[in-house]
Image 1 (cartoon, rainbow, N blue to C red):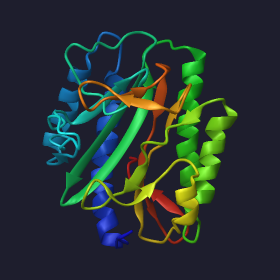
Image 2 (cartoon, one colour; image 1 turned 90 degrees about the horizontal axis):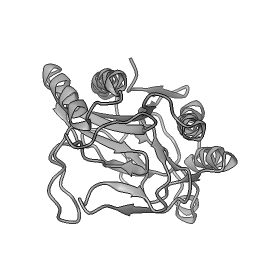
Image 3 (tube, one colour; image 1 turned 30 degrees about the horizontal axis):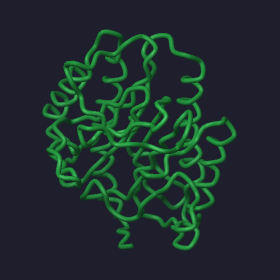
Length: 259
């Protein structure tokens, strides 16, 4: 792994990117109501990105399997969709849905990336618990990240939080380092694996990571839909996703995608 330790100056620029991300996600959370289309949410994100003088990270990203580049600024994934859902005028939010919105920008050469899940109107209590547990996993990561800490210990705590609620952690997709590029080393799993234990990540001051737990109500297994982008649960049960960009500091960590 080629992990790049960022200077305080670089982290301050990434914080600027993170604040734009936070502003956009807050607006999208407020706008995600029954009757709204996911394309309308994307237009809000694109307008706010342009006004901030930033570049939408996801738009135009090339698909590794040869499908068309990602066409939008945000990923909008509903219910059983885990990540990478494509916004559409044909997708209308409905009462009882849960929606995951993932968004990132680059400004002054540096990136910020975050995601949240939100319920549309009144939702099933089990769906609410799924979102609460996933958000709690992200909090666990933030609370425990500090120099000298092994990521495997944090990942274990995150995984145990999901397992204790009867949910499963997605293992095919993980968090990532972030800086001048959206995806940098290291890969940041939300679970413990043999590979992580043999190649553990020792947190150091200056590391910047996008931590993003993805949790399914049923099986951890996922499939990619025919559009080549949208990832959904194999059993059709709901999924939730939260993410923050964090920087490891002398005393702990700083969340860069908060206002």
